[in-house]
Length: 106
Image (tube, rainbow, N blue to C red; front, side, top):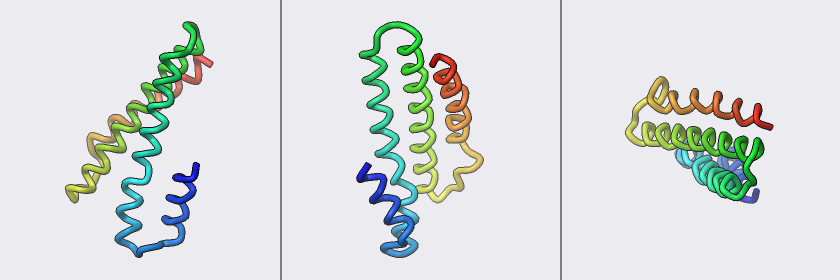
């Protein structure tokens, strides 16, 4: 929570100028997405078999796809390539059916 608030504050206040905002904007989501991914995978592994566990597994798959998309997008920006349209978009689009499946299992 503190990480999200600090990242948002830095981006909104413009601390460090445009260069810092550009780099921070590219990478502020990666640690938060990875933390969420690790937490959902751990929960899915420990959940009792049934619809709830299936929902956690689908959510883990969705967050994995989203994290891969973020990583590819950040890598594209680092190589000074426009990330849209690109390979990251496949993972971002695949995120939605997986998250819908998780919602249906609830």
